[in-house]
Amino acid sequence: MNIATIIEKQKAFFNTNQTKDVDFRLSQLRKLKQLLKENEKAIYSALHKDLAKSEFESYLTELSILYSELDFFIKKIKKFSKPKKVKTNLANFPAKSYRIPEPLGTTLVIGAWNYPLQLALLPALTALAAGNTVILKPSELASHTADIIAKLINQHFEPEYFYVYQGDVAETTELLSYRFDKIFFTGSSEVGRVVYQAAAKNLTPVTLELGGKSPAFVFADCDLKMTAKRLVWAKCLNAGQTCVSPDYVLVEKSIENAFCEAVKNEMQQRYSKPEVKIINEKHFSRIEKLIDKEKVFYGGVIDPQNQTVSPTILTHISFDDPIMQQEIFAPLLPVIAFDDLDETIDKVKKYEKPLSCYIFSKNQQKIDRLLTEISFGGGAVNDAIMHLSNHNLPFGGVGFSGIGSYHGKAGFDCFSHYKSILHKPFWFESSLKYPPYNKLKKKLLEFLVG
Ligand code: NAD
Figure 1 (cartoon, rainbow, N blue to C red):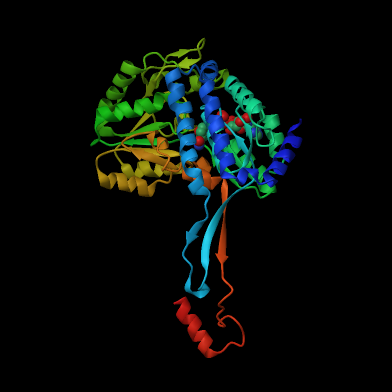
Figure 2 (figure 1 turned 180 degrees about the vertical axis):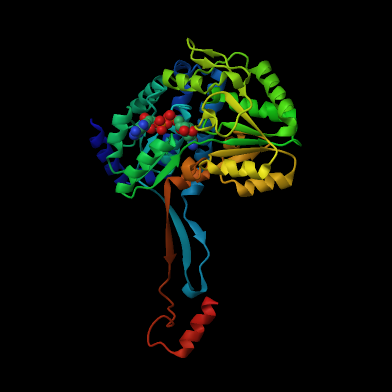
């Protein structure tokens, strides 16, 4: 069956209304969870082949997130799918008002390679939970994971409901030429633009989960040891190939040295042997070029054979350095020391709006100032990345870092339309809106409007 036929079949299947049945959705989500559970070994093996991820990291950053979201939706979709009552205004008395959530239809989900299982299946299962059908295109760069996803889904789900279509730019371009009811894309801002343009042709709504340069501010009053511990973990997770990774650090000059020493200690203690590899040679050589040997404070060891890069601190960095001109996506931590916060905020604001921002300080005034003045998708105070693990915090970017958000209820909403309904009985009708109009009616209207 070619992809055009599958998309047509999905549209026809959606129109049977089966996916609107909550019991049907529940059974499909349970099936997906069981499928993942039964195939954990094969999944670990694929993730190891693609990125040399350990089982622990694969569980922590891929499978556990999927399980927890599946459990969340299995528990909540009944409630989420019910019409929501809202207040009725006086002018419409007597009436009920409510909003009915409805699935959008046939959706396209395009995944990225850095968390190749989670970033493909999390939006896909969210779309299914909201009652849509899904065509999923995983990233071709993590090919072993893409293969196992395709094998599991295409063997166990009907193509007219949930289908994995593999391929690279050519296949994605082909997919984008068809009309969908929603496109959910995770990847770079450049390709995000391509997706947005393709969607515009059909006025298809999009969610774009993109990236950017996420700063971490470190103030002199922070707990230095804890700051270093949390920041280094966040930077080294998945070898820095994380969209919400702290891209660079802005540290108050008075503690620059102490901060770099604390970060170095953490890196030495816990991350002396890099495990996770850089996804491919192209990225590896891009990263190699970003290491300015004269600015290496610690690390800077690359292993072309295993395609790994050691956790690295770079100092004496300015905003003009090449490493500050692109999203790093590697365990390289450039440190910029500052003593003028106004000027530093201005510099950060010259970049496109980042996906995240992190602030390490005990001073509420400084925290409030940054939270107010810098626009970014989401973030954390005195931590990094962990905001993603709370599904009550919708996850998404702003400006160049993305459009829309998901995780938890926000995900259900992102794949739903809410029909607004005013529901009136027949037994009463005010004469107010009907001609002939007169002064009394005008006065009454003014009273009602307030
Ligand atoms: P990418 O944009 O290169 O690729 C993403 C997807 O788009 C892949 O499936 C790929 O096949 C497809 N694609 C690539 N070029 C295309 C083209 N010209 N036309 C149509 N489709 C095309 O991104 P990536 O390298 O996989 O991921 C890295 C980027 O994604 C980083 O910027 C990172 O910050 C961002 N990211 C964001 C999130 C998030 O949730 N916000 C998560 C992970 C990664």
